[in-house]
Length: 467
Image (cartoon, rainbow, N blue to C red; front, top):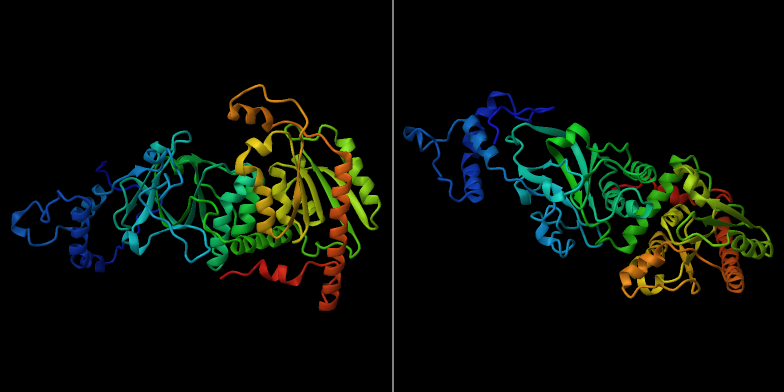
């Protein structure tokens, strides 16, 4: 360990007043026991002068011993490689996490009584191997040599996926948005991002904007020179399981908050619901993988069915070139979302609750894609939408391989055909359900005295509900 004095951007918070001289006397026995538990081979009496062995060493020696007792462990524990999400997971595997109550997400909060109020310290600069990054716990009076103390509280996130894809990023944000709402709308000073213990230096723009909207402040990611050394956090909230543990009720509350705040952020306070008799249908097209083979034919089917319903209108859109607020605006003006399976469907969380979703898949997904093919059905349920089913293309080239993994790779990014008769019948059914629902909603809103054009009053009250 480097014996040089601690070099901090903001020095370790050690009091300068004379009362600090009594700290060793007051805390000495406790610290000695702590050191003994960390290193059983350490003698209880470690003062160099035998004549004062019954007394405590001076504060410099004591703090030095505390610093030397700090043990850094790998952020990614390779012993759990066969099952990374088991137990405490492979990220900070020595530290247990827990929900605040039944139905909440799992967190590690530091400092805490269970860790003797020690601070979390991280040394992480490797973006490729999480086992080469490390963490430790340290007393605030004895932080590691040459460490940087970061005041305020920090969100520390480890995800199995990434922070660029809309769906993956949303899953990582969910526990932090919930923590923010449940803790008086407290906003973090910074975020420290990891994927499998590998440091990440940023988020995709959509994910970053949603993080700012749902956590109440600008996202500042620990990176560069700051991340290269050891950093210790005054307070840290760690989430490493995404939304595991959260009940459907809690998830719906978070999506309500995200929807309301995103609309306010984008200047849409009075958007939502549309005209009483209007049904707004949006076809969200993809480019390349999982795109429709014949977009014109698919659009024609839904346009014809829409023309048969008074007040119906159709938008044909590609979301790839839209800004965050353009996507929020589009979804706030959509009652029926029609889209191939893909990350762009994550935007459904910005639609009015009880809106409808129609999803399409290429050939091969049902047999080979596993549970991941149902994520937007689950998201619709959690966000209060109506998932109206999935159409799966049964036509197309057959897989030439025997291996299932190779076959899924073969089918994964395939294109999607169409069935005009089925699409027409399906569209007519969903349009009729939507018309009936909107008429009922309009009647309720009218009876309650709510504005025909405005969002439900409770939605906007909820956006700032924290506690």
